[in-house]
Length: 244
Image (cartoon, rainbow, N blue to C red; front, side, top):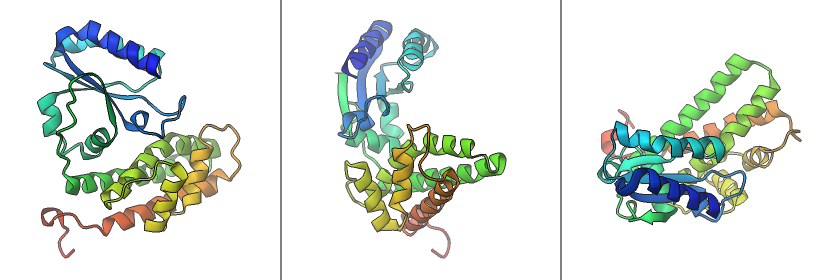
């Protein structure tokens, strides 16, 4: 991991020159729950200016990082743009704020103010969107269990991140251990921890020990309970539904 990050910073500096203000590693790679070969290396970069030419200069670095290193493309922001976007990117901003490591330059995240009422709204939106996509996938694929396992594998890491943020929305610090996170979610919402754990543990396996259809159904039911519990946390008055 360190070698990859060092090479990334070197290539970014060479491509952007003085236009590069900072490079920040954030997410699981900056926490204790990073898993080599499984977890992603999430990177934020801030630039002095962002225009077509500057992006074109950075394009070869991003292609190398995504195609050869198999990592997500870095996010590029102006520092002021980053500060002003925490209302619409509350989840991402909070991730950066709570778990980060500056690889180059100044720290553009330290002074970010995260509006937790909007964090809660974005979180419910993301959970409901995930649930809708899971339902729609069944409508398209029917009883195809290979398709079901593919969806379970593809979504569980993102779901784990949303469950972390569910605890943050309720003012709790999420446990570092994955099984403890799922267990606390069950205590808080009633969502079955074993369902989340079974999918998470088997995401790299070719042969699934449990029935994919049963897991898929349990997954949707568990997410419903998380959403319903989160929905009881009514946001500030401006965002309340009529009669809430």
